[in-house]
Length: 303
Image: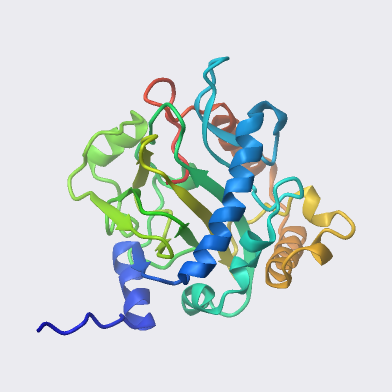
């Protein structure tokens, strides 16, 4: 009889994250926790699918098709905005086992950066192009030191994520660079497809080259989120106006509220210059007009 597999240590996951650019921690969330989050995610999906045109920044739907009469979506940005907030999803940042990895990598003092909900389309499959997030395609750190921790919390079986391990620690190869700037979805040397089950979490460095795909018959519900250290000098500027509305932070999960308060504090003390503001506006414009279906423009973001 073979021995049961042993659970990997936190240290092993941190090392793999630095070297590969991602690691998968299995069964972070128990089945009953997944069930509660899945039910909450269905409420969000139902709201967005009922009328995607009713949502605007910062709760921007992600489309596979924008043609009238055949509109299809695969996600929504900023799921913690007041019109989408679900307590079962907001509570994720208070989950000890979930947060211990981010604390091990970034330290004890974290700030909120982003939180989106991704799902399988109803009609039209999507293929995201190869990319590094935030249009930072040429960024790399030879030692693997991250500016953030990004994570996919899988609430269903999920094989959407593809990546090039180690690509966050070196320049793009010519083949990779050509694929990125041509917005290619084709195979690349060294790519891996990551398969997860309900309750698993992919912790990733978004400067690793990656992409996502999903077909309508691959039922998917995934929380796609990001945190940074308060000591990290880059990033930030996602303390949206709703976070500053009177009473909002008092009405959400306390752990999430603490991260958002840190985000507000960091943003207020780190104003950005005009050049960076213009760059971010271009990125935002690209994302809002993007369509991730098999036709149209494939501006990669998320996985």
